[in-house]
Image (cartoon, rainbow, N blue to C red; front, side):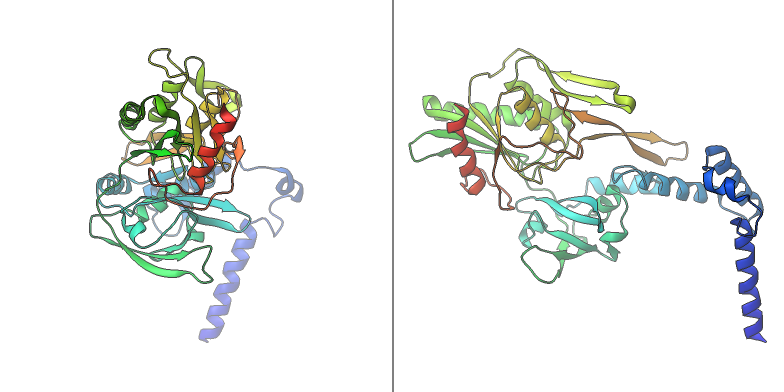
Length: 396
């Protein structure tokens, strides 16, 4: 008897579902083949669920889930956060860090998590993680199940002393390895500088910009002024090392570009239909137009670092050496909702001074060089820095 009841209930459920799907003839075939779901029909469906579902529905929870799913379908940088999640993000932002910059990417094989940068003297660096490694799993969350960048960032954040379990696949290892990171306070400087010499005795300022945060533009100016005084007349050029730089505050990157470009547009954003939403231009005061300049980038240089590189490239102020950059150049708007939740979605894309798109394209180097994934250190002459030094002969 129990078996018959179960089968009968299953049959009833299937029959009801088939009827709703129009497979029993209640919806004309020609309508189902050509009609598209619109907001009127969507709202009607939501109202029907609210009114007729067999148990009372938590309207706020259902609408939040719907908005979360819709935004996640747009791109990895569009997302929804409930009020409690927003509070958690704010709390975690001032806590412990892993030292990882990780990007959620999608290809034909689905989502994957690629490490763009590893901060020196960080929990990740001490465990031997490197740019180019992939995170297979964070805690209990598989990378293939993640939809948005904010999910990744929340999983990698926490209080100082918290542990984050990772499963990591490195390109040079046959199998992924499991490890745990103990979150620590940030220790890495945004800007580091040193003077390096080539075989001919020429001196170069090697300026490593790891990310763009508050006052990083001023930090670059101070470092340059200091090293230029030390190098004196023997200074042959400046190398802006943006390898593994995941971006950050765009305005700070533009402060650096403005130091080397005298006039003209530095960057612009275009919204729907290609309409220009914003342009940022250079200022003539205190501009260095003579010091030879090289930008060193790799495939993990992203966002604000790409805007800096392409601004200097389009104005013929610097040669870009290295690999095609990551290709992230979008603008997000945060829409705060009355309950304390927030919807974040992409409203524009960045374009170079010559109106070249950045998002999905990246910055193509003037001098292509295949680079080994690394965390650059100021003054350490590795394959990338040597390629930049060699490129000064082309810049003359």
